[in-house]
Length: 70
Image 1 (cartoon, helix red, strand yellow):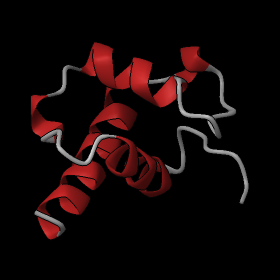
Image 2 (tube, rainbow, N blue to C red; image 1 turned 90 degrees about the vertical axis):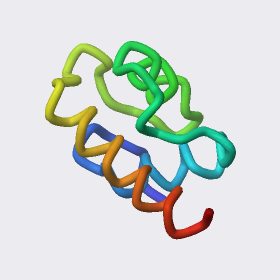
Image 3 (cartoon, rainbow, N blue to C red; image 1 turned 180 degrees about the vertical axis):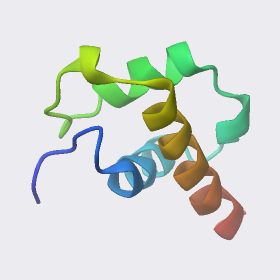
């Protein structure tokens, strides 16, 4: 598997869901989301390249995963 980057929202979302299956992604603040993403083992991008739009895309993809499995 290639490393995770800000461009791989769906892959990041899946990794976050696997790591935090009990968390409703819509309750996570962007500051915490940013921290959790950059702490993922396979995350290889520059933390400073994050944007609100990218975090929102990750949050929405994670929410989809959460809804499908709840």
